[in-house]
Amino acid sequence: MLFERTAIASKPDELIKKELSTLRDDNVVSPDLVFKSPYFLEFTGLKGMYSEKSLEDSLLAHLEQFIIELGNGFCFVARQKRMIIDGEDFYLDLLFFHRRLHRLIAIELKLGRFKAQYKGQMELYLRWLEQNEMESGEESPLGLLLCTEGSEEQIELLQLDKAGIKVAQYMTELPPREVLLRQIQKSLEVAKARFDNYIEDKE
Image 1 (cartoon, rainbow, N blue to C red):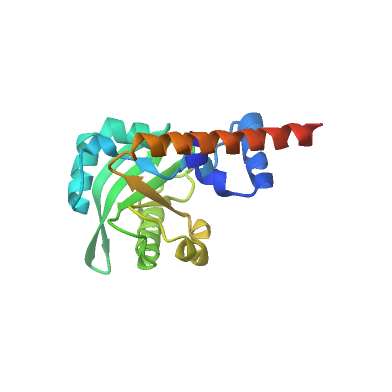
Image 2: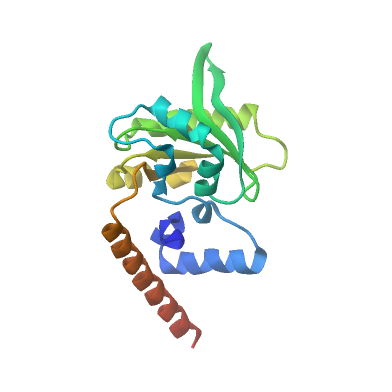
């Protein structure tokens, strides 16, 4: 399911082919190949009601497993990164660096559905990081908003990709076995259809 969980899986086929070709030929990784949704955070042991702080505490206590779920190339930088803007303190939940993307990755943990105001908060954090933390040779920072639910229409209207912001769903409990089996079957069918289309294009 890894490919289906990456952001690139929802892009048009032509763009997918281009991205995969760039990866294969030039060994260049794009943000859409790095970020995925959903993230499975069942190792936190959290169930039912919990707070953003409890989630953050649990992720840090299980940092190795969290980085494995994020994917290759992520390096932990800071927790509750303090930023002073207009004399006011702001705190970013988690800050990582991605070695292949050469970018800082700001992560904000949210309970419930994505809300439009999260975009402004993340943009503020990204611009501050760009101004105060970016080293020479690095690309502009990217933001990842981890929410328990997405809001597809709002995300599309806000054009978050253009702002360098990704939104992903997370789950602290794995779905039942039957649901996972259905999803795996669906993913296999999608992958087979894409492969068949690729073969037809080659011929």
